[in-house]
Length: 185
Image: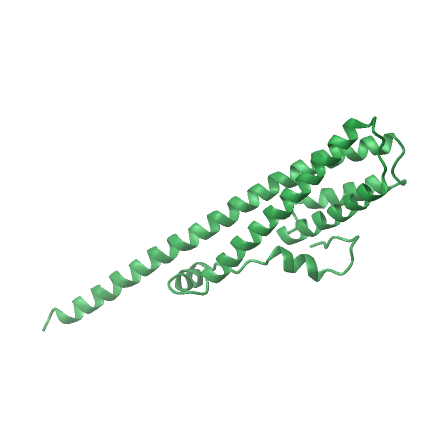
């Protein structure tokens, strides 16, 4: 009779610790996957920055761009890498850059002897496609993470350690109505 209370208390402590360890493991798994996807996306954004800068400089020196176009795009490219902006704001800046580059692809006619520019354009288009798919993969991992912090046992750990739900990139990009202005914090 004297051992009943310590056995019940010990069982509760063991179950609580097991739930905490399993919940923490699951949360860290989702956070790691989300951060891995963001690193991939960030790498692709840097590649886009490098390729688009070269492409815009080449078009600018050939006089194929309207005045101020490359500066406007460069400003949004800088916003893509601004650490003071959140991830959704950085992706919003990417959406603006993507839109502007697509307009340039449609409006600029390249001659057949401009192989270097055509190769740059092809590389840029493939990078834009890769960024779009990486963005979707990141959004999928954010959805899984957000779902995981609302289920047992991870909900318990998320509450203790203040894990917060993350914003989806697609939703945050759609909420801004002005196309030319990336949000500022």
